[in-house]
Amino acid sequence: MDRKRNTRLGNRYLVFLIFLTSFFCCKEVPEPVIQQELDVIEEPEPILEFGYKLEDFIVKRDTIRSGDSFGEILDRNHVGYPKIFNVAEKAKDTFDIRRLQVGKPYTLLCSKDSLEVAKCFIYQPNLEEYVVIDFQDSIRAYTSRKPITYIEKTATGVINNNISETLDKQGLSSKLAYKMADEIYAWTIDFRRLQKGDRFKVIYEDKYIDDTIYAGVHKIKAAFFEHNTEPFYAFEFTTDSLKNIVDYFNEDAKNLRRAFLKAPLKFSRISSRYNLKRRIAVYGFKVRPHKGTDFAAPIGTPIMATANGTVIKSERRGGNGNYVKIRHNATYETQYLHMKKRKSKVGDFVKQGDVIGWVGMTGNTGGPHVCYRFWKNGKQVDPFKQKLPEAKQISDSLKLEYLNFIQPIKNQLDDIPFLETDILNDTLEENLNETTQENNNIISTNK
Image (tube, rainbow, N blue to C red; front, side, top):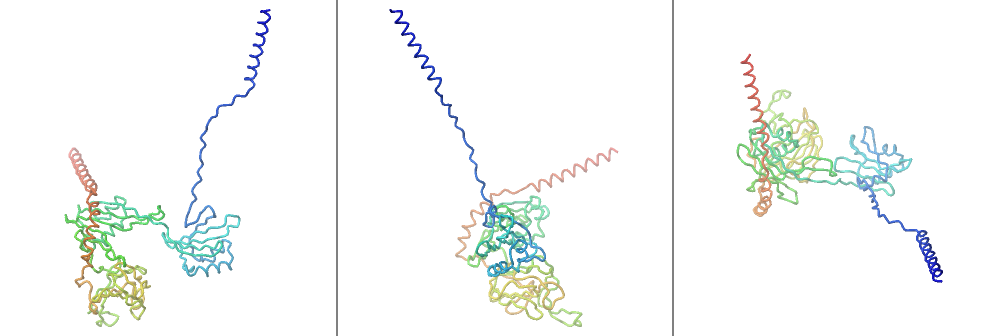
């Protein structure tokens, strides 16, 4: 009985084991979850220019060509003349479409379809400004500017021959030399007589358009020039914020310039001086006084105001042709004759160096030049024989402000180390030449 009972128990246990085995074998075991990091695809930022998303349009770029007009450009890009006329009429208060200049770039934003119909016309008269004429839905026109960035930089050098050569060796703009020579130190240092070993340091700003287009040197903030071992500091300072008058002063707040420029043109030659006893062959050698100084230059050369002042005449009259006359104060007036075109009008306040017109041949003239006339107490005089006044000094009320303003800039300037490599390279070159010559002499002697 016990054997039978044990046999039955064993059989039951065996059946139970078979059941458990079949249960677990048949049940699906979940696979382990493998966590994967999915790459996040970032959408590229849209390309923006002139305030538009370029990806929304077919973009066409070109330049104004000879014979091009606003109407012809739009007509070539599937805009009908009734709409062209309507666009031109509504845009004329913002921009005169007749002023398109040959060689200037323009951009067309066209529909993104097979017709490629122009929707927007953008004209760039210069690197900074652009004119938008948008006629997608309603018509609107406006002028805007590209973003401008100014980056502060420093430069230093030692003169071996001239300052332009020194800057060129370092890959720096020659405009730095012009600004130092003509805008800052014109009355204190003669840059035609620089000495070998003269040295300079300068803090300046470079100008960039859209962060990528280099637009040259914007301004010099401060400079130090050592000429014949004598130091000359210069710091830019605004003396009149309302009229935006900026001058350069030294460390003692003394103005570095004179009240008047030496000439109304940057690059010119004197073709005829002030001469009250002048005789001309064409007039039978009769005395015909010349009360001006003629500066010869190509037609279109910019004419500058030689000092700050107010325009009191701007007209075309007789032998003077187009001319501008400026009153600088109760004592001095200047006059600029034979202009091709006048830029300034009566009542304008102009600053020293502002362009007031362009060289021409209007009136009685035998060639392109500007006749520069200088008036003192109502009488025409020779400007080169006058003891010209210095420019306006800083007022006592501004002097303390100026000295506090320049102190950190002067410290920055003083901390810039001089670049001595030019002199070192010259010394090495001289030594090398001497060594070469000695070797040549030895070879010649051995022969």
